[in-house]
Each structure stands twice: as C-alpha cells, then as structure tokens.
Image (cartoon, rainbow, N blue to C red; front, top):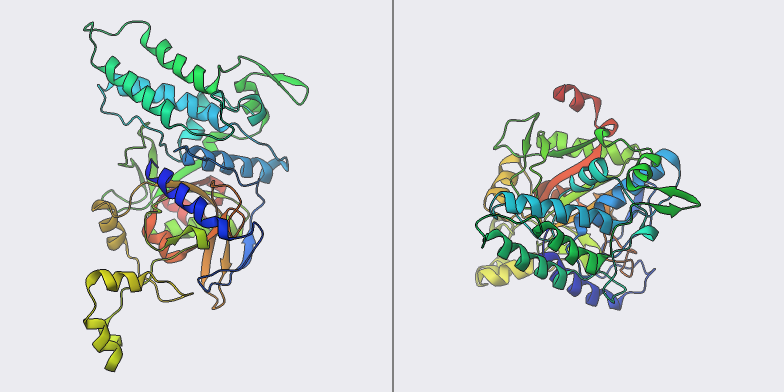
Length: 397
C-alpha cells in the first residue's frame, strides 16, 4: 500500500468538500441500508502519509479490543510505523537493498510489532514532532531512503556501528524518541506491559488470501513488495475467502482488508466501489447499437464507468482474479477495515468499509463495496480465527 494513495487521498479530500459531514445523499443514485455493523472506534485521518496499513491495522485491533472487553482505546499508529521503519531498514541493508523500503506495509505488520515490541496509546506517542498537526511523511521518508542508499553502498567496505543510530536520529527528529515507560490512566507502563493489558493474543489472528498459483488450504508468502516481513497468508478457495468475511461480519467480527483502489469504479467521494460489466453488443439493437459501435474504446470505457446507481457488474472467477493479480491490474494499494454489510435499493449486498481519510465525507469516513469489487480486488484479509466458518477451518486442519 504505497504512494499512489497520497495523490488519491488529496483528490478525494478536495472532492468531499461538496458534502456536509452528516449528509446521506448519494449523487450516483445509490441508496444504502445498513443490515449488520460491528462495534467500532472512530474514523481516523492518515493525512499525507502512506501508512494506511497501520491506521487500518490499529483500527482493526481497536475494534477487537472493543468487541472483547467493551473498552474503547486509541492506539498509537506512529509507534507501529516507527518500529517497522527500523526493522525494514535492517532487512533492506542485510539484503543489499533488495527488500522494499517505503511508507507501505501489510495487514500483518501491526501484529508483528505488537508481539516483538508491544503497543502504546496515542496520547503517549503521537509521532508529530516536526511542526505539523497532521501526518506528512514525504520529507522524512525521502531523507531515510537517501540515507539508506548511501549506507548500502558501504563506502568503508563494511558497515560501521553507527549507521542504525543515524537512522534512529532521523526518526527521533520527526517522531520524537520512544519513551521507555509512560503513564496512562494513572498507571505506569512499558510498551510491552501496555500491550499485555489490552487482552489480545496475536496468535488468534490469521491472514488469508486466494490465488491459484499456490496450493489451496496451505500458507505462502504473498508476493507483494510491502510484504517485507515475508509473512505467511493462508491460501483458500475464492468462495471460502468470501465466506470468511461474511461469517465474520455476521457474528460481530471486524476484518482488516487490503485491496486495490485504483479502479475507475472506486468512487470514494460518492461512497461506493463497484466494477460495472462491459457492455455486450448482443444486448443492444437499433439506434442504441448504431451509436455504440461508432464510439472509440476510450469513449466506451468512459460510458462504462459513468455510474448512475446500481447496475450489472462483472462476474469474478478464480481465473479472472488470478489474471488481474498476475498482470498487475490488481495492485497492493490500500488498507481498510470491513465492518459490516448493507443492501442497496434493489436488495444487492455491499460491504461497509471504514477508511482512514478523515470523516468529512458522504458517509462519515465509510463507504460501500460491492461483492464483485471485493472478489476482484482484494489482496488479503486479517481476521480472528474464531470468525472462520467451521467448514473452512476443517479444511485448514
């Protein structure tokens, strides 16, 4: 989930200005009715940072804490981001620059940090030490990339003992130093003791994907650049993939969701994501057919994505899903949280998704994703293992 999101976020934020914060109208003609929504913490704002993976990951963990304990917490995104930057830099240097180093990450990174380093509340570590009130990591990330590029050249033919402290110095300057201990709600904690106090066990969470270039019902390391920890994802059949999400939201579990949002049918400012079907000339006749055949390919695509309410969408198969991944039509763009499902005015189902682009949008920071869009454009999900349907869990032994 990378820099593509920064430009899309800026455009979406500008577009949203036409809508009042609580306005429910949909200019595309959709009318959504929520059917099932899990308990959730408030929508956050990643601002101009490419750290959607962390905001969605923390939102998912906050929702899990709320589900299990009833307590609402606000976890520190920048504690997670900082720890990942450090470990990502170590792997970058150890692999001579062949591991991806950027702002992006995966659905597994929050659990990775939780297990190794703990957690902090937002009030104890905001990571805003550079004269801004909202996150903007461009300058800091560019500085780290340039610094690591020079270190990777090994001008002394070997690494000094100082290079990691140099990187930590950049992070200290922008984020602030991480305190060894902090006081929260009248009690002193370390990051490890605070994580333990929250009552989550990262061993209870499983990441899933669905591609046929690996055997089903076995794990593999998903081949995307932001999977820098080479994390393992359980590979399940497409129908089981969807069944896991459906079972989760039906039973009150949130789902961390990594997906491609670069599609023309991803209409964030309008609060909906769909993939309209291609027009079949066999369905046209008379003047309608005569007009259609005279259109250029670009004009046909513009008409396809000139969405005016619910309509026919593509049919997704395991083969088409795989093809979109292999030819990189489906890319690892963005992390969000699926928190329920809804129906439109025709009874068609959509997933209700919490984003991290602030709440000043048509549905207050949420949007609705069609089942076709989910099947075609999902890279991976993370969910509590108890949310996996029993028949699917049996296949996974």
